[in-house]
Image 1: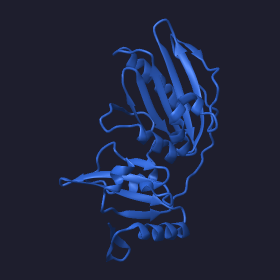
Image 2: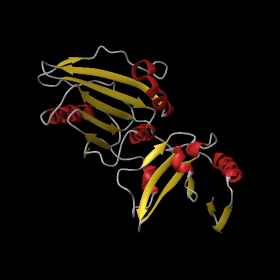
Image 3: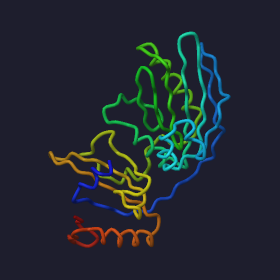
Image 4: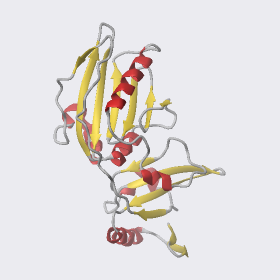
Length: 246
């Protein structure tokens, strides 16, 4: 993904400041599911030992400010369903992690901020929680069961059901549906760049991406801007505060 971004010669960057609020969170609990036995005595994983559970994938989760992972298993004579609740620092990092594993052509469902479903899985995000539900086998009859469990878990979780506010700053016209994303750090592969909100567009046959880079403070913004200028092959000023970087 980073290589693809580096090939974009002209891009727009806006530096904004955002603040995050932390809602009081209830202890994570798993609901009962009719016809299934519930098992919850699994380890609670944290950034130090997540690799024991998902091995190489742990690095990406930790990079998105992962806090902990709670796991439950539902079983009967036919199915084994595993439910995983990944807790991140806030809804921005959680939604960002979700977007790294989502594709625009998935079968989306209205749950939490967003989710998608197949016969063997349901994944969704709500507030600071990224929920994954997967079963060992499935057909058309298993999908409703997974969705029922997903909705009951969603009701037990506190948090927003709206995308991070920064995504609302992007123009609506020409957006490519279900393609927005958030890069948590080192945007464009540069160590000095912080996280970035990304919105792909297809407007009048022209495809491009807009980025909003959040630097938190004006001082950090100026520091990043100066380092970015040093990386540019050329910079053209169009009018006050608007530049084209090549």
